[in-house]
Image 1: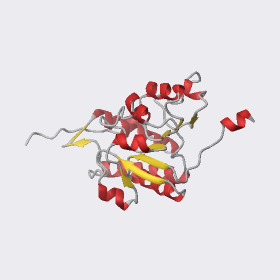
Image 2: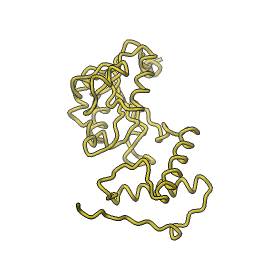
Image 3: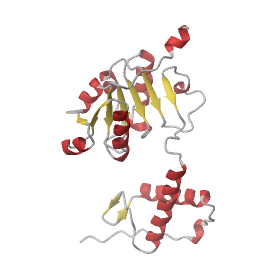
Image 4: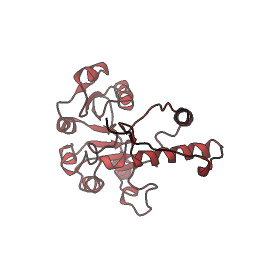
Length: 231
């Protein structure tokens, strides 16, 4: 009986769901929270009052307000220089002792050591994690055995429809590039593609080829990165 009481869950109805990020995924999570009777608040560095109102959520005046007043905090921002370490020891200290942190975005957005300390000390009630700085998570990692952590192995996106969309998009992007008309260009400054972005594109393309059953031999493909002359 003692163990059963310790494993009691928490109701969502009437609680506040705080969203860090209100993009495509964040907006869908907002609707799910609302369906369960939750009050939804959102904040991000670029979020406007109009966009928050369109999603039917309250715009937090600051990140601190969202953290201090939410029962559940869910992260839905992309990893960038601005968001790396967005949640650290100070931010975790602002959360309620009864609050939960959910990260299905990217691990480096949350300071790992600060999170472990907050979970061990009871500064927050628990965490739901689908992303980690090292994947698979090492066998001896403390996050594997902490009683107030629900961890999944980065599978939040693993569905048939998502995979089909990924591979279709990759093939279309490669085809458009080879035809000289790139589409969905990101990380692009002028006419210079950063080496990091280029290598990531190669990895995705190779992965799609393997999973899709195609045969790709790197030596048969030639890429040219041309830097535009100054104007």
